[in-house]
Length: 179
Image 1 (tube, rainbow, N blue to C red):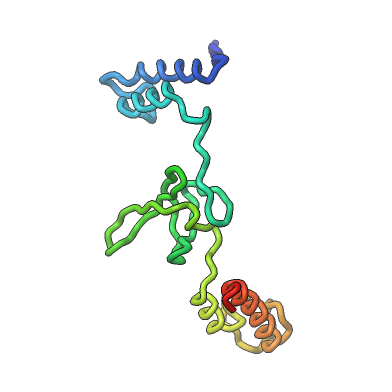
Image 2: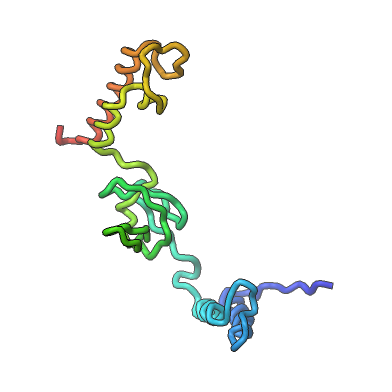
């Protein structure tokens, strides 16, 4: 028969019970849970005894696009235009890998300087103009024949016109009031 345990009425009492359980595994031997060693078990007990500020979990930092940033996500660094995987969060900051001078490390950046969406740039627009309608719409070179093409236009000039209109809108948005 499995004995059922119930969570104490208050969070503080529950944390204290969990801390006592973990402290039992923090002796000289391995931790009482399979995935923690004695040192980790003691650290977890300290966290449970002290609790977290605000009676819950810390809020995730918010990126420039208004979305919360979570470890494991891929974000764009707005000042550099590079993609990086998020390895951690700290307060209102995001921790991403750094590749300065060929050496691996980590860098802490403000959450407001990253985005889940690729940032617009003059270089990106120029590259898309050079690529022509095929890569812009389909990711493949445009043959100009349009037979069997699944692009948005019915002819190559039509595709160029649609592409130019979309790029003009992006250029105006990027330029803002500085047109």
